[in-house]
Amino acid sequence: MTGKEKKPNQREQLAGDIKKRVISGDLKPGEKLPTEREISEHTGINKSAVHMAMKDLETCGFIKTIPRHGYYITDLTRDGNIYTMFEILENGTNELSRQVVTATVELRIAIEGGALMRLAKQHTEEDLNALRQKNAELQKAFEQDADMRCLGAKQGEFHYLVVDLCGNMMFSLIGHSFESLGQIIWENYVRYWTPKECIKQNEEMIQNIQQGKGIENFRFVTEISSKANDYFNEAYYESGRKKKNVPSSKKRPIE
Image 1 (cartoon, helix red, strand yellow):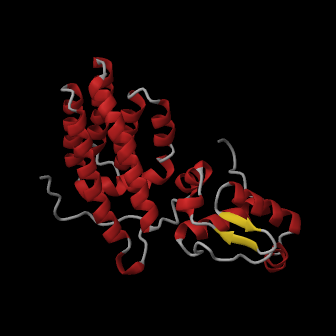
Image 2 (tube, rainbow, N blue to C red):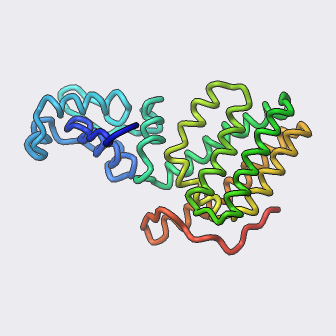
Image 3 (cartoon, rainbow, N blue to C red):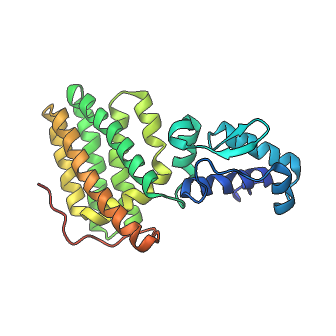
C-alpha cells in the first residue's frame, strides 16, 4: 500500500473493537451486548453505522442475533466460520489468548505436516534447492547479526515455502493466512530454539523430504513446534500478563 494507511471508519472501528475483545476473551461466549441504541448513545456513533457493524460481526461469526432478545457473543469454536478464522489470523496479533495461540500452532502443524507428507511422496530437485536457498537466507541473516524480527521472518518463509511446494492450493491459502499472526510466533520460535538450531532443523526436514520420510517429518515438526509453543505460552502468559516477545529458553533438548 502506498501513501498513508486508510483510517477505519466508525463502522469498522466499532466492529474491530468488539472483535478484539472477543478474541482476547474479554467478551465471553453467551454474553449479551447492549442494544444498538445503547451502543450509539455510549459511543457517539450513529445508529446506522452501529447496525452495519453488528451485521458485519454476525457475518464473521463473532455475534449472533436472538429474535426479540438482542445480540450475543458466540462460541467461536462452535459458531465461527471461515471468515472468523481469517479475522483472527489477520487481526488478532495484539489480542492473543492462550487458546488462540495453541489452536493456531496446531492448525499450522496439521497443514505443514500434510504438506511434508505430500512433498516426501512427490518432489523435484528444484523443490529441494528452493528449500535449501531459503535456509541459506536464514543462515546469512544469522551471520549478519540480523534482529529477531528478521530471523523470525526468514524462518517463517522456509515453512511457508514447504506448504507452497506441496501442490495443495488450499494448504497454501490457509498457510499464508498465518503470516500476520505467525510473525510473533516465528520470532519466539527462533528465540526458543536459537537460529543455529532452526537451521539444523530445516536441514533435517529437507533431508527427510529427499529420503521420502513423510511420516517422520510430520512427527518431527509436531515435536519441535509443540515444545516451542509450550514454552511460548508459559512465558507469554506469565503472571497473567501478555508479552510480545519472550526470553530465550535455557534448555532446548531434542530427543
